[in-house]
Image (cartoon, rainbow, N blue to C red; front, top):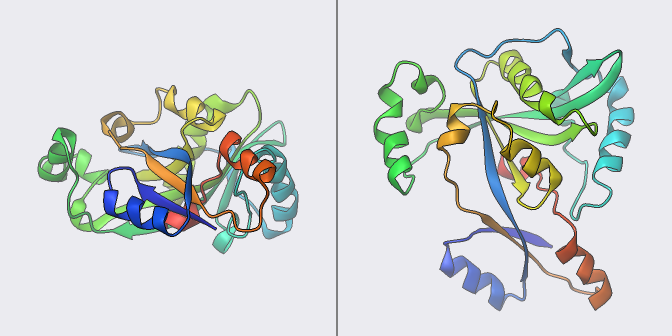
Length: 227
């Protein structure tokens, strides 16, 4: 069993420690945004018949991750792929979400809550009273194609009719490093100053050696858990 806890939520951390959960990893929010997202001819929604083959690609990519499962990777058949020369080089599941934001701490939080909603272009990206975004789930990327991910995300936003997308990644994973250093993730990601989330787990029935893998391996964060 696992749980996600905000790093500054001391009451939750104390409660979950008392329940026998152990801290194992941390993760961060990654944002993507475009004022005018554009479709791409190389990005199409995956057909249901192709989903088993895509599931195999995902299973291979995440074979060394903890907590990986593909139950919701193709939820509502909203999985998009980018093809080059007929081969899939990147893919991602799209989960539409709608939240009402009450408060964001810090200086940038004040800017996002008080200024952005009234700026002509930025209000497309973020409106606290009706924050519409895509949850990027089960991201796949063939080795060496990491720079193509923003193009995939943009096409997904265009196809779904959104301007903003969010995902959550283990902050010591290769996927996080690839997106963190990518300068084409958009304005919202540059402004985002998110604090890390913490991953806790309960290891009932596992040996110490089996538990070590969860500390050493990056964790797969299911976007479905945040949708």
